[in-house]
Length: 142
Image (cartoon, rainbow, N blue to C red):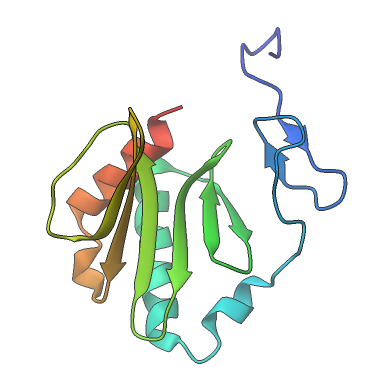
């Protein structure tokens, strides 16, 4: 804990510079250029940019970490991840409660109070108030 701010000190990996809440958090140090996610995936790029902009408007700034598997949106930890596909994006986020919705591609109960949700976005209109509120809840859960 940082005595002045009351916040927890983050651990910074000495190899890649990514920050984590837990000391020596297991992770991949392999950098992956953000632009590589978008090669040949113009629709995916446009949907990603629309989602990022909508989240920045609603919740403010956050870090973006590009990993080989996906793009993480990070506060002090990842609150959402985006996989760029040719004609859509797949967004995942975790909440502390169960939700029933036909919008989910997949939902998994990870523990007694942790649920992981995947949702496919194929049109910009699907980046709506409901989706943004779910992701904002994931952002605020810490």
